[in-house]
Amino acid sequence: MEVALTAEQMVQLDQLARASGKDNASELVKDLALHFLQDEAEFQHAVREGVAQADRGELLDEQEMDERVARLLNR
Image (cartoon, rainbow, N blue to C red; front, top):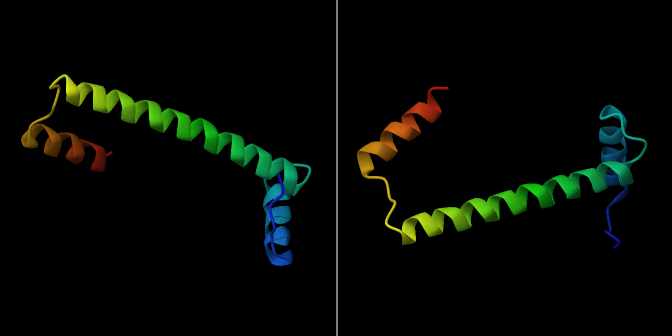
């Protein structure tokens, strides 16, 4: 796979690579792509789990959802 980037974008990637301890921009981009793929797979799994729970009627009422959101925001 090839990705067309501007010279400025390549410079930015090289700088990020060096700051991240990578040998080059290609290594950085590969690591980022692999990380994205893992995150996306986990997200898709969580969505499927949520849909299955909803299909089984395992839903939260509004008050419980408000409480959970409040707890998350007060971390």
